[in-house]
Image (cartoon, rainbow, N blue to C red; front, top):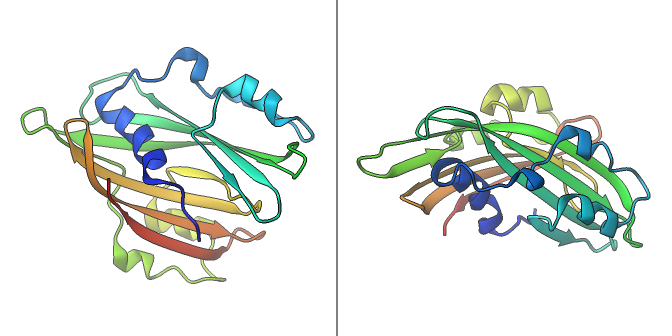
Length: 201
């Protein structure tokens, strides 16, 4: 399973801890605006609505995928804050027209100390739990029971549904390490494939 570059995963979660105001109002993914995305719409129209995506992928079938992500911190203290992580995945066919899209609001909690400037975002991922995932058997609901709500849910460049859990830790404004679990689901929302990797800057 191909994964996106590390920087696309770290930046939104870093915003939660070190830059709570890093997204402007115009960049927020609002459910009302997301509702304007429809099948047959051009890539140019979508990008006029949401700006440049956090990442773009191309598939061997000629499809392309735009992923838009924004982190919206909840009101409250900087340390120990929670944030909504809104994501929009838009899949285009070979002609650059919207084939399908999915919108998801996840949540991540940040914790840290002002004294040491150490921080972490997301829940740690246990290798033991990951090994309990059974391809073709473990359902989406079972995955949520095992790991909690996903950080991001969306699509891959072939139109498969995906779930992603991300844990990152660091010091000051610099991430030092983390882990990501990505699960690809089949049409019945059962785990088709999964991969966990260490995240390093």
